[in-house]
Length: 121
Image (cartoon, helix red, strand yellow):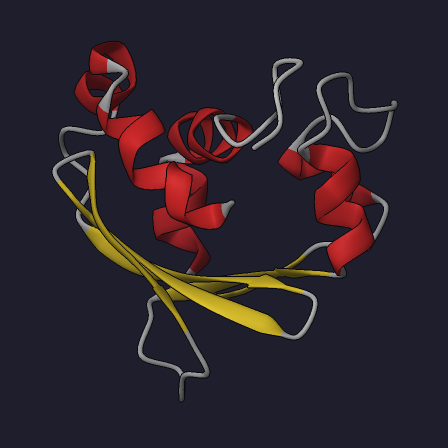
């Protein structure tokens, strides 16, 4: 499912334009599985499955069941936004958070691209 991120983000020109000044690599941890996501000027260049030894600028870590709720077609309150997950202390944001916070809307919209829209993903 995470592999679909590249096509879904890169297929949204408005989102790519929003991230045009963003170039980074970050770790997305879904339960025990780590994914290294490389972004260059708003386009997702690669999505690679881990394990990794901290080769990223920051990491977003949450249990698999929390990501499943976030990526459901209609996430429940408290699971519908990255900041809501952080507030509930189920999502850990670690590392250089300046990059994450400066581009928060981009990351919110990019990760929401993995939500199912009624179809199986």
